[in-house]
Length: 454
Image 1 (cartoon, rainbow, N blue to C red):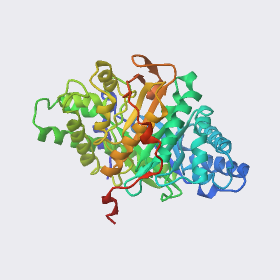
Image 2: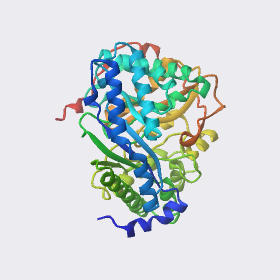
Image 3: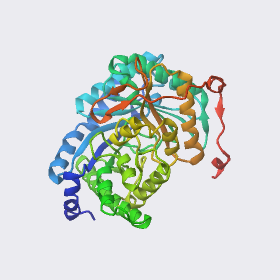
Image 4: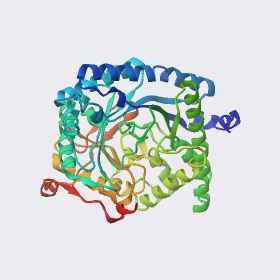
């Protein structure tokens, strides 16, 4: 049972420590919108999303008022559009038309993002998959709220290196198409290994084909709460540290569980999962990097960072999993650069590099996230970075991702301002040495042998 006493215990966390429910995301299946005629398909998509999500924002606002819990975002995820448009799209421009429809209906119902402009190509690409991928620069430059994700690899299938090479080129093209906005389109584009079907967080959210017709997924966030709790046990041993994180994660996740159940009841849509992640924001005091510093590091990136992050990630999961009936999504600690003031400070101080961030992704929730790099970085270099991150996910049987922004016209030492939750970021240097011959080989990197544990 969840009661108001538990909610009241979190009041101070909400008022003083940046505790919030980061998102209520309604996942919607569009499989029944498939049609051989593009215009009919677009109409069905618009109608299905509008009918299912029309009350989402009002419901979120009502829950905020009733319980005093900030719900920062209300979002929608849909079935990967490569699957929905395969029957009616004959060229990339056709897929881009569907993206415009998604953007229009997202504005109509009032959500801030809609995810699922996606393709799942870990083993190979269909004609529709490739067309959707080729349409991404058009789609993201002509919409405001559409987010795109591509799954390039998995522990079971290996890494699709043809898709990895193509995505390096697509990221560069998206940067060019949106260069007037500091290549903002790339902030709405993420590539995955082992992408989950029920992730409520953008830009990677999509509604998996194994899910119900519609579900409610909630993402919670509380880096500031964890940091404040750790301040009270400064200097204590690791046992005390771990217990403190677990207890705090439990309280944070209970808030998410409450919101999810209330939203489910009010909307008449089944509850899916709570994603018990620590998702930072640019706000001072709402930083995962600050937690690492409170654990004992001068800056994120100092020796010991990977161990501290592994500890944090594990204790968040151990505490949170007891607080919700269903836990899913990504769940753990996010380490985006532009969205975390502590990470920005670490990069500016020279304590944090892309290589160190890559090492940290072995033990965190996702991967290389919201990293700004020079605009003249080669597409093959971006593909090489993607391949490295996909390999970490494949071998370690975890979700990894890359959301990287080559900012056209800017170089190392400059800053880029994205605004809002996306924050700002210093342009980080990239290893200058070539991986062209590696990326251009083509084909697929086989799955590791442990993938045959069936």
